[in-house]
Structures are given as C-alpha cells and as structure tokens.
Image (cartoon, rainbow, N blue to C red; front, side, top):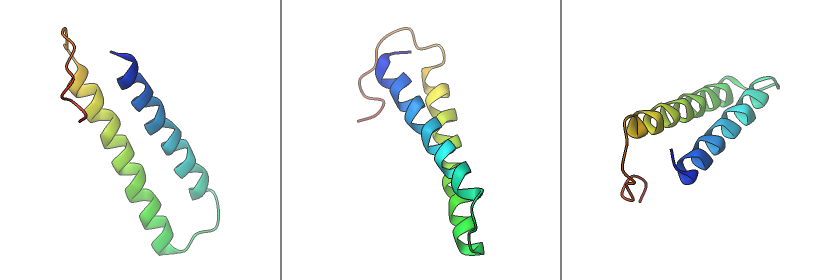
Length: 65
C-alpha cells in the first residue's frame, strides 16, 4: 500500500475517533443520527480503500482522482 493510501486510512480512522467522541456527548436524536451516518460512511470508505488495494501489485494513479 502506498503512502497516500496509508495517509487516507489514517484520516478516516481519525474521523471515526472524532465521531465516537461526539457520540459520548449530549446530542439530539437528529444529531446522533447524523453522526452515526458519518461513522458508517467513514467505515465504508476504509473498507473500500482496503478492497481497492487488495492484490494491487502495480501502482495505480487513477484510484482517488
């Protein structure tokens, strides 16, 4: 996995930690739903990144343009 993809993974993981922290605060039902949706999107982004790099033996520059 190249450095750019590793950096993107870190950003998604940091976002997840941020959203988890927000869920530990007092939020309205609407806010909670929004944060849970964002968490789901971040987790999906991580899984897609992992899937797209699985078995990748040659550098690809068109993955995240």
